[in-house]
Image 1 (cartoon, helix red, strand yellow):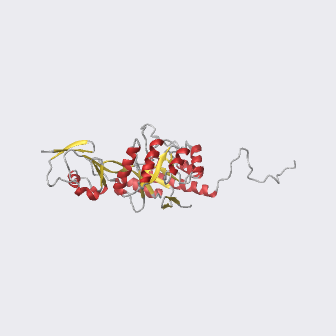
Image 2 (cartoon, rainbow over the protein chains, first blue to last red):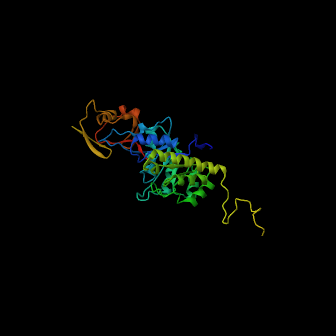
Image 3 (spheres, each protein chain N blue to C red):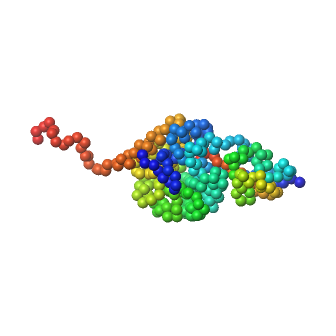
Amino acid sequence: MSALVIADRQFQSRLFVGTGKFASASVMAEALRAAGTEMVTVALRRVDIRNPADDMLAAIDRSRYQLLPNTSGARDAAEAVRLARLARAASGIHWIKLEVTPDPYYLLPDGTETLKAAETLVREGFTVLPYIHADPVLAKRLQEVGCAAVMPLASPIGSNQGLRTRDCISIILEQASVPVVVDAGLGAPSHAAEAMEMGADAVLVNTAIATASDPVRMAAAFRQAVEAGRSAYEAGLPPRSTAAQASSPLTGFLRDD
Amino acid sequence: MSWTLKINGMLQSFEPSPELSTLGDLLEHLQIEQTAVVAEVDGQIVLRQDFDKTPLRDGQSIELIRFVGGG
C-alpha cells in the first residue's frame, strides 16, 4: 500500500480516528492501537472548573499519533479561527481540521464561512484540512486557497448512514490535486472500504468505532477494510457492464449445436 | 476588597493576595493541571509558559481551555 502524504507529512495508515464518544480513555487508547492509525482528531472545550481532573490527552501517545485538533463547535469563520489559534497555542501543532457547523441538527458544514476561515488560517501558517459537504466546486476553491487536503462528508456526522454522497465524492476525487479524506457518517467497515475503492486517500472514523459494542475489534475491522479498499483501488478495479461477461470459456461445451 | 473574574463564563469572586496574583496561581487555586491547558484573557491567548507572568486584575474575562475527545 502506498504512503499518504499530506503537506509535509507521510502516513502509512490511511485511517484517521476521532477520539470522541469512547467509554473510557483506556478503551480509546487500545482502539487507536488496533486501528493502526497515525492521525487522531481532538476537540477543544472549556475546562470544567468544578471537575478539572479529567485529561484525555494524557491517554494519547503523542509520539505515535499526529494530533489533528478540530474546530468543532464553531458556528462561523471567526469562531473557527479563534479555536484554531487556541489549538495551536495549546498543542504547538499547526494542523487543523476546520469545521464550521452552524446547524446543530444535521451538523452540515457552512461552506462560505469555511472558505473564509481557511483563507485566514492558511495565511497564518496553518495546515488546513476543511470538513465540507461533498461539493466539488467548494473543494476546488479550498484547494486554490492553499488547503492541504479536503474532507468531504459521506453523510451527516455520527449518522452511520455510509456513503450517501458517492457521486459528488467521485467528482471531487477526479478533480482534486490535494488528498481527499472522506469524513463523517461512515458507519461500517464496508462503507470505509467503498470510499477507499473509489480512490479516497483516507477516511476519518469516530462514532462507528467508539460506539461499537467492542470498539477495539471494530477499530481493527476498519483497519482491514481501509487496507483492503486501498489495495483494491491500487490494483485497479475492472470495468462494470450491464450484461454478463462469462468467466468460463464459451467454447468446448458438451453439446453438438 | 474582593475581585470578580469571569472564568469560563461564570462569575467568581476572589480575594487578591500575593499567593493569588497571577494566572498560574489561579490554576493552582482551581486545582487545574497546567500541562494540558491554554488560556485566553480578555480575548488574548496566553501560552502556558506565560501563566506565571500574567497578572490577575479585577473584571478580567478568562477562558481556560483544554483538549477533549472529538471527531
